[in-house]
Image 1 (cartoon, rainbow, N blue to C red):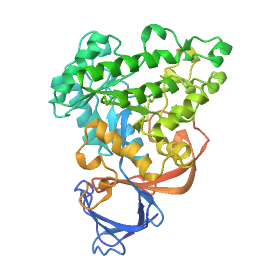
Image 2: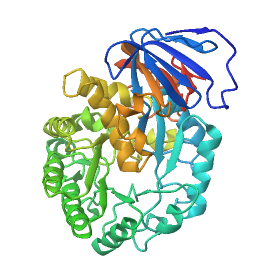
Image 3: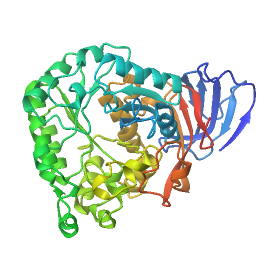
Image 4: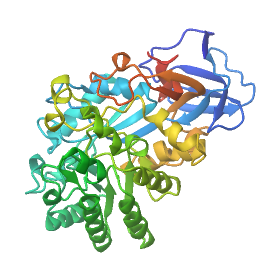
Length: 447
């Protein structure tokens, strides 16, 4: 991608100026020109003329709507040694994301209007992508009393997604009350499905590998039992349930059953659960320690099929940065999680597009449209075709589908390096990201 400046560009803070993208392929279709005028996608067509615009020669690049991540850990406030809102959103922009939902397990926990507004304002100040805080379901993530759900919903951050991620809301009565509460403003409870009594001291997936290594196993039933219970509760209440980081074949079947009932149940899967298996734990390298754990090849196959047929609604990164002292240690002491914002799109291309399980429009729906619908983003962003038509907000990603790149953790914008893909060659590379018409990434670099 080359850039030709035809005229001076307005201050990038001023809604982005005018940008003419030459030869882009919306959703992988025929090549056209795309004019971004301030925050709006103004015109699409062949051989557009736009005097005074900055011209990007984007021949062959695929245009996708700005990606949306429903599950990001930005760590701020409290663990700025691992990540900050500024560093995390730079990583997000490089990965093609224009909106991320920041999980509540910060220090202090985002369980009040004050904390979610702090995170929201930090995102606005950083400016690399929109930050939508996720509010905690319970005070302090302790699972005993509901947090200030209504106050967070009515705050400046306008929270609509609530999760105790990292902990399961294991009390069925409390979970029912949470579902009832958020129904009033069409919120959603995003559950970390983990029956705590079945996973005490668990270190990896319960199966052949855990038995061989002599490590306490995490049974698939611990996830599946909570999903089944909460689907029943959501159906009973008529409220919205979202299941975080689905990881087992049995969970896919339960979700398929719940959706067949017409219940308002959605789910996400991470890129690493679509690719990696528990065999990797045999190395005892804690980079492969995640929550929920990596599962078997049969689970991976079922997750890919479930994402392809819509049983699983979307891909979410579960970007989980950790400082070296928390990750580069023995397996049992290491914190679970992987960074993922800068590699998610490439992994999705590898496991879903290249094998023909999804086309570009389908991938855009799983990484932009569906997360927008679940997270309550503006209506115009929920249909990926409409998001790339004249009049839409100019949140656009330009991807080079032919490019390959080698993962270098030391080149990450994230403050953390805990990636399982170091040294791996991945397909597809984000060349540009536009947030409301303003470039946050050009030529693969932060602006």
